Length: 214
Image (tube, rainbow, N blue to C red):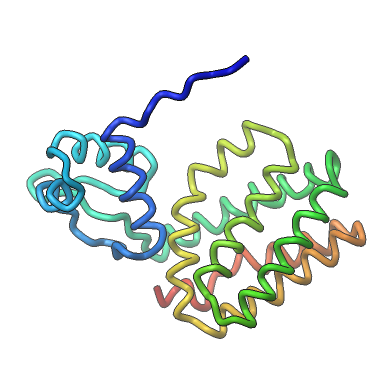
């Protein structure tokens, strides 16, 4: 059945713009967000900006402090440890489930992405590489075919994409990350699930290194 798509409201459009700016790093973590300034920049009234702030606060990308204003999220050391722990739980579960339900599809998706990653690295296109990094991890959930698991992951996915883009300034992390992605993809292509999970835990559960320099 053909479905008519409702045009996005101003609040939804403002949310999309701000979300993209936060994830890309155009707006810094902890940055104060001016309702009036954003409204002027985007050519809207302050009402949709206020509504967008409320939407993004539910997503954890901004927080509002009474009498102070609205700010882009920040993560302290303890929160970084916690979010890494959550990623390990969700992504290893998704990887297991994807290998049960669609191993061939997952292997093909990861092979395609790592090929694009290699091209991005050769071109020195860090932004493209980091977007592919986000896509790589999302594929575990796409092929796990479990909507509840994916919904749980989406609660942290945007924050992780933001952190990932911040790491574009850390060449050593980027090189290590690239090698681990290739290793995970190769192991899964050979159905070496347990070994791939060992690499995955090392990859996303790291409690030191570049994340702590953001």
